[in-house]
Amino acid sequence: MKFIDRAKATILNTRKSFERFPVTIVLSILFTGLLIYNFEVGNDLTNVARDNLIRLTMVSGLGLLLSLCIGLLNERLFRARGKSILTYIIGGLILIGYYFFLLDKFEMVQMTRFFGTILFLVVSVVYILKLKNDINYESYVIKVFSGVFITILYSAVLYFGLSVIFFTVDNLFDIDISGKIYLYTFFIVVFIFGVSLFLSKLPEKDDDFKDYIYSKSLKVLLLYIVIPLISVYTVILYAYFIKILITWVWPKGLVSHLVLWYSAVSAGVIFLITPLLEENKLAKTFKIFFPKFILPILVMMFISIWQRINQYGITENRYYILVLGLWVLGIMLYFNFKKPLKNIIIPISLSIVIF
Image (tube, rainbow, N blue to C red):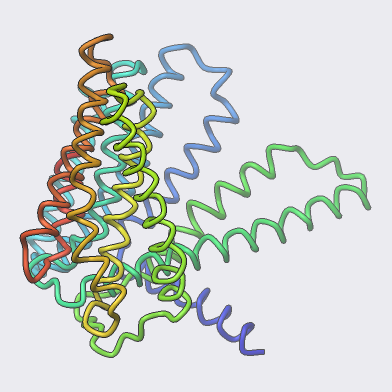
């Protein structure tokens, strides 16, 4: 019964999301409608009309995220109604400009820019509301990701339930339900129900998280599973580093990928254990020593990247690895020299690099 009550309360709370982010909800409905419309009539349109429809759909999806960022920015900085309206007008002009000038083709450059812009906006959502007030920021981020997890769980259950209903009705009554219905239901559940539910779970400006209780399961996962695994991985990389010094056979290209993602995950772990530094010796020890131990490994990674570029030239993928590697190096140097930490620097700097 408690679960049912919580489920009812969660669904009812989605109404708050419309009151708080009306433009985002409207755009989520528009985006869903355009996705369905693409599948229904896209093949019957001329090439130009179809390209314009795809372009409009992509920009509306971009607008969904942009409007969320604007809504959060207004809550943080621009409470006055006139300024809030102005920010949405500016956002609309940005989307119009993006439609006409930055999506003129559907080639690699345009697609890379599009998905990079989406990633930039997603990362921005994590910190915009905490600008100028990053107290207990780690707890805020954990709360946001908790909302993501709950949204995925509820959406998956809802979609599965609806799919079972369609399947049962189809087979019992021979209605011959089109396979597209399952796809359209997925779009509606994810981009209307899911977005509304996630927005209702977003913390508000005045939430201070002073009484936030760190999840025991997350604490156990990070301290007694993830950190030991990272430590073992570090030992393996050091063993490989010693092998290089002995044999003088320099790293293969794969090493840069392995080191990069391991470093990025480790930065995330340090971020998440920051609230535990005062109470847990393992967390404090890891935070103090790991950013120092990883620096030689990062040097090895940059040597590997340089060798690949020197031999085969620079490609888009090598450029991305190099830039992200420089960001990770900067974050690790920040962990080494900055006390106390202001962890909001991590997503802000990452969004700048992405942009």
